Every structure is written in C-alpha cells, then in structure tokens.
Length: 293
Image (cartoon, rainbow, N blue to C red):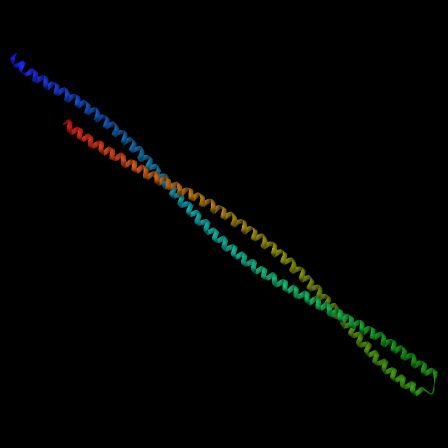
C-alpha cells in the first residue's frame, strides 16, 4: 500500500501529461487534417487554374492561327489590290492611247472637212468659170450670127462691094472657125469640168461616209471605255471595303490575343502564389510532424 501511495502522484502526473499530449496530438491532427484539406483545395484550385490556363492557351493558339489567317487574307487582298491597281493603270494607259487615237481621228476629220471646204470652193470657182465660159460661148455664137447676117446683107446689097464682102466673108468664116474651135474647146472643157465635178462629188460623199463611220467607231469606243472604267472603279471600291473589314477584324483579334496573354500572365501569377502557399503549408506540416514526433 505504501508502494502504491508513492507511485500514485507520479502516475497521475504522467496521466495528465499523456492526456495533454493526446489533446495536443488531437489538435495537431485536426490542424494537419485542416492543412491537408486546404492543401487539397489548393491542389484542386491549381488543377482548375491549370485547366483554365490550358484552355486559354488553346484559345490563344486558335487566335494566333486566326490572326495568321487574317494576315494572310490581308496580304492576299493587298496583292489583289495591287493587281487591280496595275490593271487600272493599264486600263488608264489604254484609255489615254484610245483618247490619243480619237484626237488623231478628230484632227484627221478636221483636215478632211477643210479639204472638203476647199474642194467645194474650188468646185464653185470652176462652176463659176464654166458659167463664164458658157456666157462667152453665147456671146461668140451671137457674134457669129451677127457676122453671118452682115455677110448675107453685104452680098445682097451691093455687087461692087463683092471683094470687100468676100474679104469680110473670109474673115467672118475664119472668125466662125475660130469661134467654132473655141466652142468645141469650151464644150470639151465643160465636159471635163463636169467629169471632174462628178469625181469630186464622189470623193466628198466617200469622205462624208468615212467621217460618219469614224464618228460611230469613236462613240462605240468611248462607251466601251467608260463601261470598263466604271467596272474597274466598282471593283476597287469593293476591294477597299473588304480590306477595311479584314483590318478591323484583325485589329479585334490582336486585341483579344493581348487580353488572353494578360489573362495567362495573371493565371501564372495566381498559380505561382498557390504553389508558394502549398510549399509553405507543406513546410508547416513537416514542422508539426516533427513537433509531434
């Protein structure tokens, strides 16, 4: 009994220490469980963050691919725009050449008109000369008639003036021959003038027909060139609109990529913070385990 009484306070003390250690162990276990739960929550959060980060990376990769496609589309549109500008320059060059040709045609038509006016003036002058020759022919014919009448009158009136009449008759006959020769020359000249007049009229008609043909060709060429120019201008406006829309889309895609990159940086920072927290919790857990041991 004495031995039991001696060890009773010591046993009680050990029991208290054991109970205290058990309580402390229970508290540490609860802390450990809490830390493990928080660590598991952080792992889950880290996994979710990694999944979000992977999704954002995939989205960013898709945005980069779309951005490359947009840039390729812009390059293609720029190439098409350059080709269109080249074709437009070629068309304008062709229009300038056509305009020069048209100007040459107009100058040629002006020369033809001037030639026609000069030819018409020459024809009028020649016609006036022909009229004058006809008047001269009529005067000569009247003069021949008068001389013939004088000759006949002189032969009837007097015998003694026979010699003078014969001389006058000879002179009159010579004059008649000269006048007949002049009349024949005038007739031939008149025929030649009429032939020349007919030829000139044919030339005038031919030149007038050519003028109308050139005028029709000029109008057709002008209509065709105006139509081609309008089509090219509409194509250029349409290409400019497509290029502007593509540039706007590309701008939005680049802004979206920048936003995604900022989000990735933010998630990386969060991931680093969570990793640091997990590391700190692991260190605290190790310390607690060491204290428990």
